[in-house]
Image (tube, rainbow, N blue to C red; front, side, top):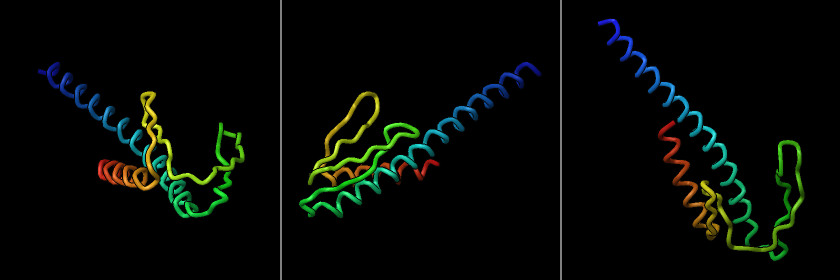
Length: 107
């Protein structure tokens, strides 16, 4: 009988670890989605500016680069699993807002 309880306990412990791992991954996704949304908001506010946008972006942990982004209405979003798709800025904002709301309800 103790073996059965021990096996059940181990199964629940494994499920708990899996859920905690999923929560950590989702929390990191929320941070990434929020930062991407703030960038898209900035690009949308500068959409009518013919000069485009000058910004700094991170290449690595301690390496930043300055870039000039010409006026554009399209952005490419990295979806993972070696997939990147091009969206209109408004479409990208809608997609990321929906994803953020779904992830926030799970976390």
